[in-house]
Image (cartoon, rainbow, N blue to C red; front, side, top):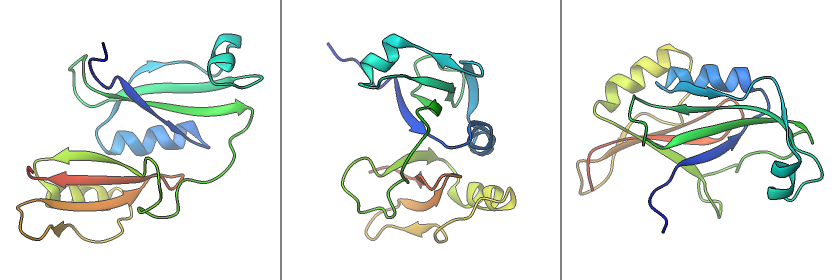
Length: 148
């Protein structure tokens, strides 16, 4: 029986740059796969001829059951393509991070050099505020404050 989401994967073009970015959001590396991990089994599971990757698992907080990010940089084959160009693309479009103080986080992250699409916006008829931004490769992320 499926019990929870364990992790989701974000492929990146530069692992160190992406780790630095996600640390600004409060994520910490909890597992480092090292400079390269070549695995025949992983290649087969991913339907690839070869899988030579480096990567890390990150999470927020100390809860061992918290959902992780599996951040990977493919060395062979090299990464191709770009993230979705907009938020209305079919498929997984963004990761949402819940916050208790969106205005403070918005200001803190802007001061760290993160560029936002807009200022935090209040959703009509709710007490929910959201704001979106991108990681170094252009993957969309969202901060959300409030409850539905």
